[in-house]
Structures are given as structure tokens and as C-alpha cells.
Image (cartoon, rainbow, N blue to C red; front, side, top):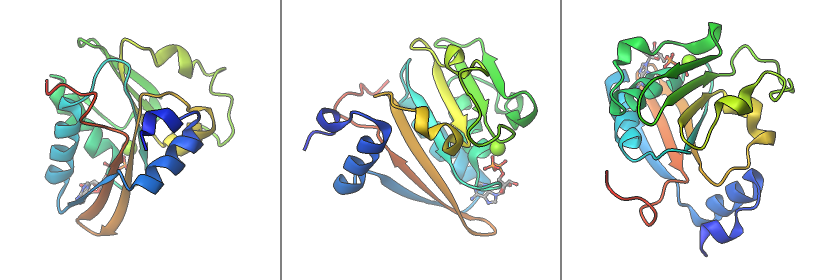
Length: 170
Ligand SMILES: Nc1ncnc2c1ncn2[C@@H]1O[C@H](COP(=O)(O)OP(=O)(O)O)[C@@H](O)[C@H]1O
Ligand SMILES: [Mg+2]
């Protein structure tokens, strides 16, 4: 089944992905490895892509985001937990937008917060705590990354929704 034929909502898309087992599982044994997973993902991203990061506090979302940013030419030291700023935009080409919904209440009106005006078709966006925006995420360009704490230094990283067929290897 072609996944893009069935994707009419984030939920349908997820169901289809579950069925297809199209996620890629990675085991990371250090923050550096998680950064490297982010870097490799970042190299495959295109303008319009929205990377949704799921996982608890300390799962490695910001660590992975640093790797993505590095792939786009941003100094990873400039990428911080966006918890206090909520949205940080970087002047790269395409622009990179780092969003962190940690402090946003569950069920908050994300439109009112201006979230959707920051997620644009000409940018690459990364959303930490995407759980909080899930109901409103229905784009075709969503890449889901689920991070799970396994042990002090070990994390499971599952990436869904990125496909070779529509990716050139930039
Ligand atoms: N394999 C790993 N991958 C990512 N982070 C790890 C790993 N092992 C240990 N850590 C630690 O876990 C923490 C992850 O923090 P962070 O990336 O800010 O998580 P989040 O943004 O999900 O809250 C960091 O302190 C990091 O050093
Ligand atoms: Mg974080």
C-alpha cells in the first residue's frame, strides 16, 4: 500500500505506518550517537518538512534537534532547550524553526499562540513535545520521531514517515 494514498489525517497516517512497519528503529548508546541520528535525518530534510519529536523529559529530543541543526549548518551549541522561548528561528536556507511545546498546556489553542504562522512550507520545522499538537497536525510532510529512555545512556529512536522514493540524496 502506498502510504501517501491513505494519509488523510495524522491519525490515519500513523495507523497506515503502523501497519506497514515503515518506521526505522535505532538504538543510541550516547548523546553523541543521538546527535548523529539527528544529523543523518537532517541531511534528508526538505523545505516544508515538519519533524515531530515525541518522548518524555530527558528522552533526547533536544540532543537530536542539535544534530538536525548541525546538518543545516547551525552551530549545535546555539540550539538550546527552547522551553523558555517556545520558538527559535534560524536564518538558514531553508530557514530552520525549533519549537518546544514543553511549557504549553495540554489542549492550549496553538493557533492563538501563533504556532501555525511559524510552521511554513519554505522552512524546516522541529517540534519537541509534539504530543501537545498532535490533534492539529495533519500535514503530509510530517516525520515522526519517537524517543524512549531505555537506560541511563541508552535511548530507542524510531523514525517514521521519511521515504527514499521522494527524497533525492542531497
Ligand atoms: N543515548 C542518549 N541520547 C540522548 N541523550 C542521552 C543519551 N544518553 C544520555 N543522555 C542524556 O539525556 C539527556 C537528554 O536531554 P535532552 O536532549 O534535553 O532531552 P529532552 O529534550 O527530550 O528533554 C541529556 O542530559 C543527555 O546527556
Ligand atoms: Mg528538550
